[in-house]
Image (cartoon, rainbow over all chains, first blue to last red; front, top):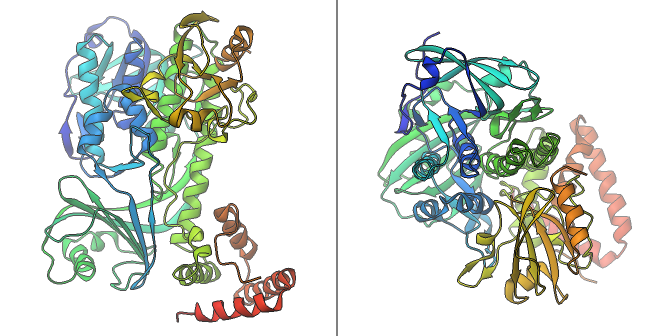
Length: 537
Length: 65
């Protein structure tokens, strides 16, 4: 089958170039091959490449597809991007918002403020079109390549078949200049919700299908709306069963309309019909241009297992959620953050291969949490039965006057990283009266430190963090580098990591999650906790 | 004690999901009957007559239709 464009590009980022592998007499072996050049695939290549691990990324296109798609990027994603060295351009380009308003019919039910906590480098959310997010990642890859990071991005390289062996994968690739083969010690599937790799391997992808269609219309307009998230249930302008208005960079507004299940898709995609809905919403006096539109349906589902021997799935290929809560791309980036260091330690022989099974366990835990939250939001936004609709509208009616009903209003529970509670890499909490938010398994909350922020100093390696307590500055434990960092016990760090204690010792994983914490330094306890955190226990 | 209309339920999303799942698969009539039983059970738990009167009044005013 020849290569054909499944979609138009927003940015051409990795044009096809002939690789020496195409002229090799036998398939060339690579430590890691990534399938898919979307945000999750490129982030995976970047994570591994920055560790010095050679990685080849294959994509059947030459860049990023058009369409704003994922537009809300959460703090945790920005923190991870910052660790990769591409957080700043995202912040510079992105739109900041804190206020959300919820309407029912023509009445405002309530207003919320994300009230971001002070003392973090990154805001709770930014809005940014997905193509920009991907472009900033690829630009960082180019910069890293120039500094010697062994990353290859191969555009118009389509994987057509895989032969999964005990200790490697044989990969058939089609290019504009014909087919070739390579081998991978590890193949990472980041090839999206309809993952061809999943299908080639005949793997399951089970869950709930939601019977609803949503129309996205991205528009530019002159009208002044505040930079807020506005959500309507059963809007008075009748453009859909629900509607969402959200601002993006470049003066673009994202508008979503809920169309229902039985629709004529081709009819609804006609510009005149899209405009009819927009006109009803915006009123007759608003001049706008239609930038992009699409109709989407969605499912909440995941693979039973994300690791299948030498093949590992990440992002939408492994799990899919409804868009409410911005838990798709954001959770995929957390997959990468979790997988990167584990694969690095396995490849350099520090950790046993079984460490990769903890990627599977931890990220399935994350996927389940995201699926639960996004299913509940969907059930509230698109009630499945008459009684469910009655309760939904009762909540909305009461929420206008009674505070108690407001926490029940669910137009999306916005993405926060999960805590790996009770999972095998954690050492049981030895600081039981410490703050719950920094318990073992939790992602480290940021805090100001000297001229920058705490998270600037965490991640990449294991870090032994001594707060108001001295720790050795650099050691090697169980073959893994352990960087020591001693910081004073004051300010936000004290509130977030100590509570009422004078000091504490934290062992922080390379993905900035807490592995263990103690009231005082004990070399043997640290050794045991680190051994456990790299799967040697 | 006055009627408490401040947020008072831990895990509101979990509660709401449980409430809806109790209705899953029921006919409209059976759902109405379930709701009636639930109101009576909760009212008995509240027991304070003045609070129940206030709750009835709040629910009546909440009817926007």
